[in-house]
Length: 312
Image (cartoon, rainbow, N blue to C red):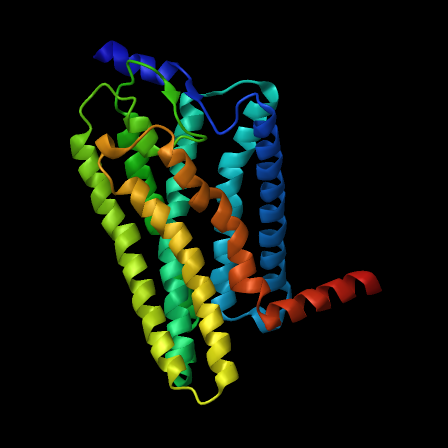
């Protein structure tokens, strides 16, 4: 057993990944690469707009800028390694590299779950209690929400990373995934991981089911308030916004819950990999479009930024 543990600290893992050597994989690789560039660009623009334009210095955009930063870090934690491995023909990742991917991925996934719940609360207060908005969402509250998302996500991530990597990996070190994700790695362990899986399930309740339930409750309350509005245009706009938000939230939480809250025995080869595409690659691309670029304040800020660039 001791030999197995020593081996796990000195031997690289192999990421089987999304791509093979076929022509269709080259097209898929190009698609992923383009999405990566788009995600970096749009999230960076969002952060710059919030920093530059005083009209966006509100709790909602403050939380959105943190969401954008999380999305930049998240996709940068995964896709560049995929690109390097594809171009070099290598599929290896070091033990330390794998540990770092687990740490950063779980920090950002957990943090984003809490941040999305905070954002839904912000929208609930803005629409359902507009007169008390500046009291309920003051600077202290918004800073606490953002800092709490990062801090709690980090603490949870450290615990899972240390625990998951202490298991011995005595057999195949080929991870059927495009990055080091805990459920895919647990299948390689030659030790009983049942107790740890129960810990993952508890974390899932805290970081997935509770925030997702709070988001659903917030949007139900928002829709009930919207239904009482006299203006049909206001109702249509609010319904449109809420429906788009819920689609993105479901695309994020749904596959995430399905991956992390099932027993190891029910995970089929490659299934987690394709589910993970939703919460690691697709939603970071959609978040700025759904939450920000459809908003007239953001579009106005973008026009002003472009005008100032051209004038100078």
